[in-house]
Length: 263
Image 1: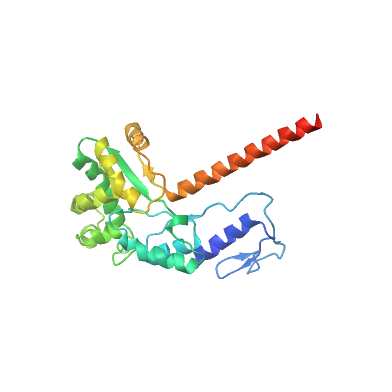
Image 2 (image 1 turned 30 degrees about the vertical axis):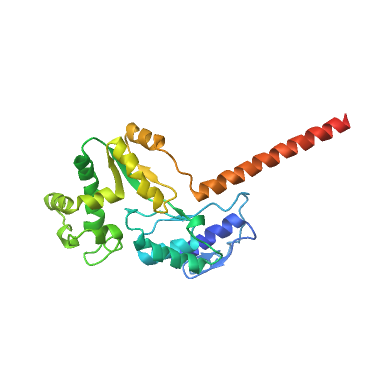
């Protein structure tokens, strides 16, 4: 509810249709509660702009559904393109609630993906696994958190309590218990050829933007040089740009013709 209100307020600010007023469960603008001076006034932004796309980072099923309903994009953590069925129903439920024919065709799925290039695949995976152990085994309550019910957590057969610990020694043990397959699914690691090859499942999974976490220039070069496949969204964007260019050329020709007649 709080996120829904927040997004609604932000969209009203950008729309600039009227001075901003909001009387919700969590937010009140202008504020009229205890301690209010009564001097607050509804204001309208002086910045003329557009509706800026809103992305929501979500991991729990209900949060992902809400993101699909009210946002323009989703920022998942530890996304795996090999288990898209886990998210499919949740995203579709959010799209149905949004109405208006909303679907993946107009929604940006933008996971953060760790990219580590190196000849030794196992060493690269060992770099990824401590992060997984921290999120799955070291955060939140012992009983249940959103990370324990996320696809990465459920993909691991190791009980979470075996990774939950306060000592560095046990943390290393938890890291070793995270399966290599899981780390390999949520990241792009290994030699350049292997990284390029494993990009295919990401492209086919419905992911439209990859936010790549990397620190190696060679890894960035590998991704930049990988054959690109234009998505439907990118095609539509290109079509809009082409139409704008055509309209610009037409206006310039008309302007030149008008000047010629005037002369």
